[in-house]
Amino acid sequence: MVEARQSSYWDVMFRVIAGSIWLVAGVVDKLLNPGFLNPASTKYIGFTIQYFAQGSPIKDFLYAVAFPNPVLTGELVMIGEISFGVLLMAGMLTKLASTCAFYTNLIYFLSAAWTGATEYGINLLLLGIDLYFLVNGARKFSVDSLAPGSPLWSTKIWFTVGSVIYLSVVVFLYANGI
Image (cartoon, rainbow, N blue to C red; front, top):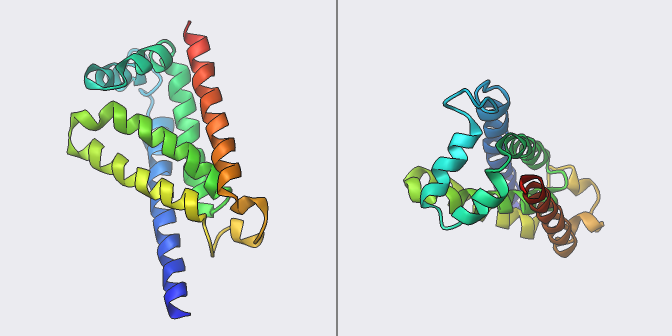
């Protein structure tokens, strides 16, 4: 009993930490950063995409999907990061949020890990946390826990839905870049 309760506390702690990382990245680094979507700024998302693409194993993907329309890409990234943060912290639609966050982190990891240990470490760590919550869900102390036995707990359903959503966004970005 005590062991299960401690496990739940650890789940909540990791969910809140991961959610806060996403929320800070989306709000502070992007939403509140006036240069993020401004092509005249040195903090412009287009420059970041171009820099990461230089040594990335997914360089062609970045140039085909993200770079043709960096402002739209930046807006979608910002919305995604804020959404992942809020949903993870609340433990709401956790498996869906974790699926989409996993794909986002995978792209970040493949795009930026070559730049150094910081990008490598944080993205690899978050990939692991995303997988954990995709498989296990939010458990106790979450909005999801208010509906035990519901489809909210189906990893297959939420992995499929999240994958379709993410693929749709990628196709949308690619189509807007042509």
